[in-house]
Length: 113
Length: 110
Image 1 (cartoon, chains in turn blue, brown):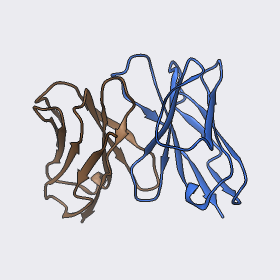
Image 2: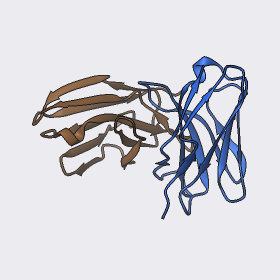
Image 3: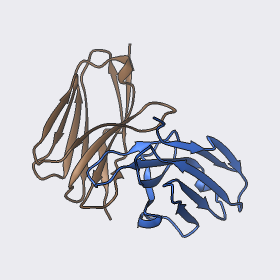
Image 4: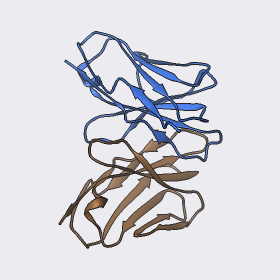
């Protein structure tokens, strides 16, 4: 049973570029959340997708957008990259019901130069 | 907005000593979860607390949820080198998403 998988594992982009990160949730999970974790900080909630719609959003600008597909996989898109967007981007999935644990993927380490 | 603070930010202990990290929320939580993140790794779920005043134990780890459901603690008895990592609490208010604390980085000196 595969857990949460993310791709790519590492990525280097230039300021102003756009990036797309991908996440496949754990089998049986239908809710996907994205987090940004800067070095030495806790994960910061970006947004959550359920039934192919963005359900909740954290305090991130519109440059951060996402999508969820019918198979529950998800993408995180970031436009007009800034140096400050360099971070570990984590995807977490969980099953139905809000009182459930989140399973995290290994993350994508994004470096903006 | 909702904020979850943890103290201390860093803790160095000798192997065999105890360790405690404290978590405080600015709002009442519906539940709180604890995660451990090893260096270079991703957060891994440890436990969830839901009831006011709840105490749960996992071997040498003891988790508490405050009576007001705004604070929580994790206590590790007789630390081992395998306990090294950053411990995060993550609170949820209502049906909202998890908001992670600032984390406590534990170093265990052999």
